[in-house]
Amino acid sequence: MNVSVLSSGVIGLAAGENHTCALTSNGGMLCWGANAFLQLGNGTNVDSKIPVTVFGLSSGVIDLGAGDNHTCALTSAGGVKCWGYNIYGQLGDGSNTNRNTPVAVSGLSGGAIGLTVGGNHVCALPAAGGVKCWGLNSNGQLGDGSNMNRNTPAAVSGLSGSVNSMVVSAGHTCAVLAGAAPLRCWGYNQYGQLGTGDKTSSNIPVISKWLIADGLVLDQKTEVIILPGWISLVVVPAQPLAEPRVVTLREEPTPPPPCTNCTVPIEAAMLLDDNKPPIPMFFFSRYR
Figure 1 (cartoon, rainbow, N blue to C red):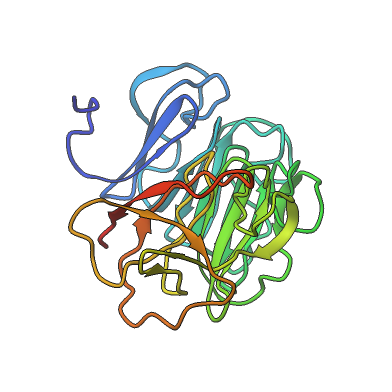
Figure 2: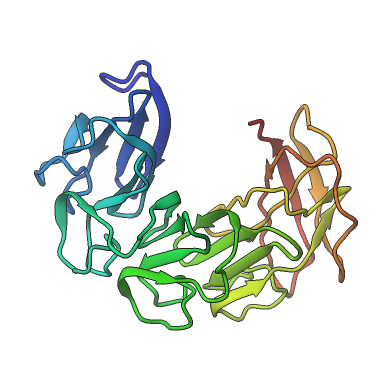
């Protein structure tokens, strides 16, 4: 079933707890669903069964993300705008006031080149390097060395250099750095989702262990994939996969040799439990 008024021209999609937003080919942004927390950004608090245009964002948007009850957009000018629920400061405008139209995130001088949105926190890739995060920080998911909520962007500790990509889940965050030991994660770790081999949460980035799975190896030429409630993994195949396959994860104490043909990230999921052996995982090709 096609969404009303969105039968074509959609190039991006994000879903929150009870709302959905789409990025159109002309750079506009449309949202629909629940609006009790103002997450549709159209200047009202009325739910909508059809897509409505986000106020002031009919063009110029290049990326989007949706949290539980808030939404953010990255503009072509490098600005980040957010709207909706703001009790934890997840809109990044220096307040804790809910907003029914987009407000500019402060503290991103020089602009941003990347954006990712979690349940109640947001992270951006500043053009100058590093990672900045804001919003809920009860599990250290902002990575600034504290567990204090932030209503403006805070620099993630120790990540001042080049960051290739990042992802955010409800309670933890991961980033892929350029160079050696590229995968860093921080935040909630009750289920081992930081990939450190233990269940200790961390409010600063920690190095995730190298993992090998049936010939598929971690390498810096990868993209992070997080599936909520599961361990975070970054994996690449030595060659593209034509169809899903099942493999079993094993831990290696040292990084594998550099991968010379790693261009296709694949998605993975594995429940980590110290008292149970690794379980099989499905891997899917993800062509770019």
